[in-house]
Amino acid sequence: MNLEIISSNKSFGGWHKRYRHRASVLSCEMNFAIYLPPQALSGQKVPVLYWLSGLTCTDENFMQKAGAQCIAAELGIALVVPDTSPRGEGVADDPSYDLGMGAGFYINASQSPWREHYQMYHYVTRELPEIIETYFPVSTRRAISGHSMGGHGALIAALREPGRYRSVSAFSPISNPSRCSWGQKAFSAYLGSHPLQWQEWDACQLLRRYESKPEIKPLPMLVEVGLDDPFLSEQLQIDALIDAAASSGWPLTLNCHEGYDHSYYFVASFIETHLRFHARYL
Amino acid sequence: MNLEIISSNKSFGGWHKRYRHRASVLSCEMNFAIYLPPQALSGQKVPVLYWLSGLTCTDENFMQKAGAQCIAAELGIALVVPDTSPRGEGVADDPSYDLGMGAGFYINASQSPWREHYQMYHYVTRELPEIIETYFPVSTRRAISGHSMGGHGALIAALREPGRYRSVSAFSPISNPSRCSWGQKAFSAYLGSHPLQWQEWDACQLLRRYESKPEIKPLPMLVEVGLDDPFLSEQLQIDALIDAAASSGWPLTLNCHEGYDHSYYFVASFIETHLRFHARYL
Image (cartoon, rainbow over all chains, first blue to last red; front, side, top):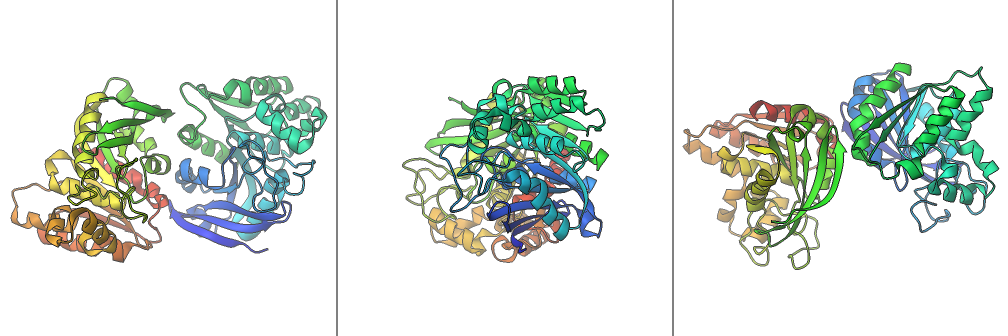
């Protein structure tokens, strides 16, 4: 495994670093960013918050815009941010912003021409954490969060494998992709048109599955939404998330904020709340 | 005066807004950004920190990357960020990144073809503050700060008119533009080749002028530099700033940080220090 360093910036006493590597499950080169807090530099193995970004983003948006490093440095949490899809020559793409590169949806594609590279679920939940835990001074205490498409990614990762993460949070998540146009478009392309194939990748449907599994201890879940988010009712389907959590008895903490929208100005305003939430369980 | 709103995002209980307007001293349309903290929304007239950005930037870089809104909201300070040069069709430009659009250097150009539009000093110190103080709930308590080329801009604005600002700070400022290649290139183009014309626009030369004016009370000045900044010795000439401040008895507080570079990761790491510094005088 060859980790090529792209850039390195000191930040709040720690280091923000970008790397490039060959991702075997994606069959392409990928960039990721890591923020190592000061505690990691003095020999401590720190826990990791994985952050999944939204449509059109790369590993850079969150690190540049969310202002998370300040609090991560205080709390001693590493931040890891993957790209949002496979990229590069030979990787299938689509001219629209909500399919193909920049729109991997954190699922494992089963359909041609996507399946060769679009295995983002496997990448963000397995291959990338293995690299992080091998090459960086981090523990296996993991939390996951994300924004919009990345909020969907964080929720499904936590719900599919609750033992892997100690807590999950999301900003403005696409909560019920089977029932919104962003999700239906991506799932049809990546998974095929039969909605049965979609259940495994839809936070609301995954939540309802816990109705029949009272033996599983739910992990803490925090969701933040802006009430002036233009995507709130149609694409995010937060009401469906509330219903699904209620019906399966999953303890969801939902914070709604008047006047806030879908942008990183919203994420930055409440990222401290989320980092302190995760710190309680990490 | 027609202020056209471009965008509006709630942020830390206040509002980040971008506007477009006709700038009469620049003879072109200009964008600027303002962050109004929560205190401004409840009827209080808040003080303003003007932020001048560096080469290639617009009004957006600082607002997206510095993480300043969090502290500005706590302290009740508005942030105003102009663009870094005139722009648009008919505005003189140059293919290089360090001359023309994105590189206005916050001076008033005297040479053709620049003088028609490149009157950025007048714009950021006069025309824009007049607009801000007319149309927004702010007081006339002003401070000024900036990064790199914008650090130079902040220093010269404060030194030329100490009564206009209550405090000045800078990150990685181009401190002695007459003696570095960035400054020499820009000053030759905008001001002509005679270095006598440059004295009025060079922080070190302006500082030395105070040797002969002990009656003027110096305003508080804070400068932050990263010791791994690749531009530190050649372009920023911080040593010359230290010498000039010492020789004129100007109280300069200079913080040097090992490992930090020239990026917004550096600015973000210490913006809280600067906002709290300005708050003491605002």
